[in-house]
Image 1 (cartoon, rainbow, N blue to C red):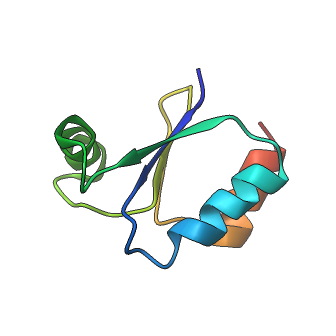
Image 2 (image 1 turned 30 degrees about the horizontal axis):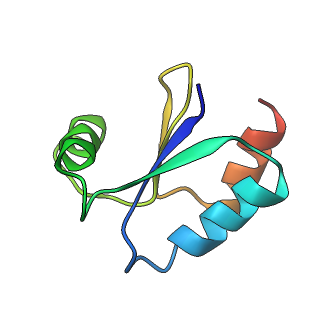
Length: 79
């Protein structure tokens, strides 16, 4: 299963987040919460009702909400 990345097309943090995932060769699926109702509802469950993007849901069930890019890179390097 790939990492689920909840996004919107208008968030400035999304492109750098996806660039890091691509750079490190991480498998992921993007879920646009503006276009997908089920993704929007799942994101609300993960974030306590907020539409915080980007949010990453990892295979083990852990979540990073609006991650600091340095911390994201470190986390991904240790997968």
